[in-house]
Length: 88
Image (cartoon, rainbow, N blue to C red; front, side, top):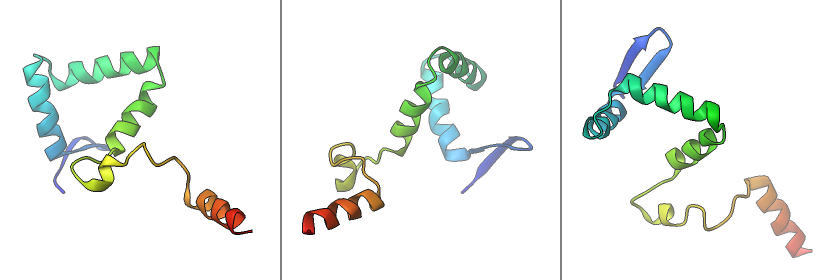
């Protein structure tokens, strides 16, 4: 994975920056303007962080990605507990 280092602890995935750069160029924005607007939006609505995290983890392009958000939101321990309760 190729990374871009902006400052000591400020690193980005190069491919990701290139893809975002193309989108921003279509909207006549630069990366600094984008980050500034993102931070302003987060200040006004902190739940945006959860939405962005959910979207970034959402898989696309394969069969499992189709099922994202449709099966449920249980972790492994809860699923195991539920399964064991159903056996009893």
